[in-house]
Image 1 (cartoon, helix red, strand yellow):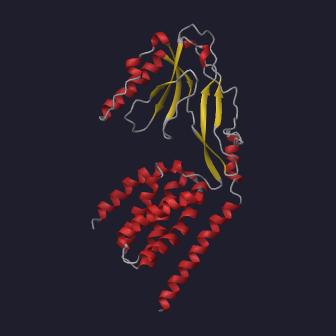
Image 2 (image 1 turned 120 degrees about the vertical axis):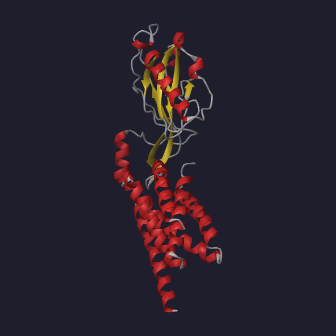
Image 3 (image 1 turned 45 degrees about the vertical axis):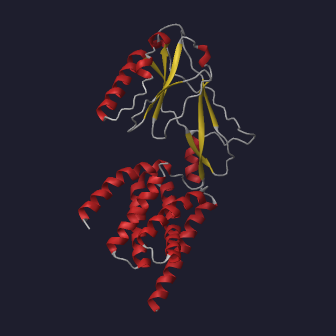
Length: 226
Length: 97
């Protein structure tokens, strides 16, 4: 066997394995989807609201128009998601809604750069780093977390440069299908989940490996005696 | 849900173990279960406690499983390392889905 090849493969794989970190759910917690919505999107008929997902390695078009219901489309978990407001007069559908799949990396980078330039000039950032799931204690009831944002504009008819950043001034926690929604996953509750949310599971996580180890030792001892 | 995650890991690794150790299915199944029962909860625990150390935890898991495969299956070091590495790579890749 080629040891060098094995070591090289291992090192390459480690880079990818590190991405899997985001999937690991700490003991005693579970992942709950978040639905982000812009509540007062209908108040600004002169603007089009789009979400943009900056997704590592993605070749697909990552700009999506937010419908009148104001719900921000979900993106793959590794994407950084932004919401922009664009004056209808500045809306460039040929650029934003270009669904060409770009196999070539340089094309992909060029398109992303073009989008960034466009957003810098013709759009205004409303929200950034939106999250679409959140860890909550295992004991929480099921359901989605509804996160509502109120957009504020000084002068809706003016160019987008006058837009102000959206604020999550109103965050609601709505139950789904009659179940109680989990507690609001704000930053403080999340950190406390990490610190204190293990409960009895913590001991199971220690007990089970210990039992397995005992069985393994017994097997090895019995084998040696034979 | 956690049992479900464990089962996914266990089944995916079992699949790989069976590719390398086909002689005795029940023995492979039992050993694979024991190895996973030892490494999986500890990996989850340490990943939960120290999320930033994911890589270190994964390396430890590969090393622990490699040692156990070597001892339990009485195979060569090289083969044990390969099985451990591939099994953990497969289960880690599955978490992307």
